[in-house]
Image (tube, rainbow, N blue to C red; front, side, top):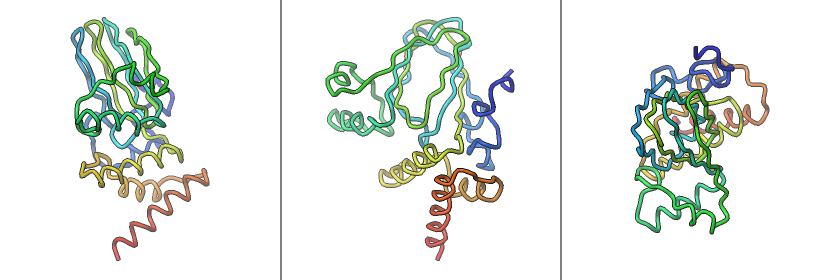
Length: 203
């Protein structure tokens, strides 16, 4: 059934960076099942290394989603700091009034059985089950300059914060360079720069 999805949403495809990792990252380049009871919450977060994600509600109940554009993640991280919660590893649930007061637009919607949610690169999101539901989800890394830049930025930010990155971005970059013809000039430049930096570190 999942092969019926368009290529950019599939668990595995040539244009998906996570298909070039060379090993399994559970729940990222494999499908993960979440079984939810009414009221269960997935706290606020960005996906590992800012990758995109696909989430399908199999039902029978609904989920309510809240999402904020990547542009505002640092402001939300600031809220976490003020409340003594670690943005990357802690458990937090934004107060909508705080976001509105800071002029942060929030997407809020209900995911019904059969609905697919696409979470774009770096989107901050949190979810509440309003009924009994089963969800399947996985991550996707489209070969775009935007996705690559956000993934690398989070890779570096994780190093600063002593948080282990789930995706080995340097390794992925070498694999992509070896096996994929990159036609986007911006992406080509970014990957080339990353590889040159990694060679410098070897020396």
